[in-house]
Image (cartoon, rainbow, N blue to C red):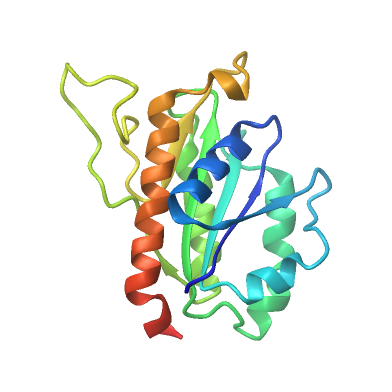
Length: 187
């Protein structure tokens, strides 16, 4: 059985809700980065034992949170020994606006994964693009390189768009499927 770990920072609870939906779809374990940018005790060991590492962060000012960046910088210890080489990687982000430069956050995560020698998994689903589509359709925001979601700045995590949460669960399922198909072959 493969091990999927979802490592994420959430400033206001929205990214945590997306992480939970990805975990629900993938069967993965959640690993939260705290408000100081640190992992809990045993977190680095949990990542070392993972077949797949899914990264998540809110997008603030066109990039991931500083807490996520601290995690990324601290991963240089694993980078030095190429400890994550051939693990599967994926990423997700949430911000208040429909665009919000979310792509910059995903590319930050993608670049981090490539520096570690990981294999990146994108969405694997098309975004709907006809007039009859709604925000509750899967991948309504049209992310391809990773999961992007939107929550208005004055909305609570309980008010998140159901279609975004369904997309997160579907993305989690895709990650689980890819991990099952190629994860152990890469090790």
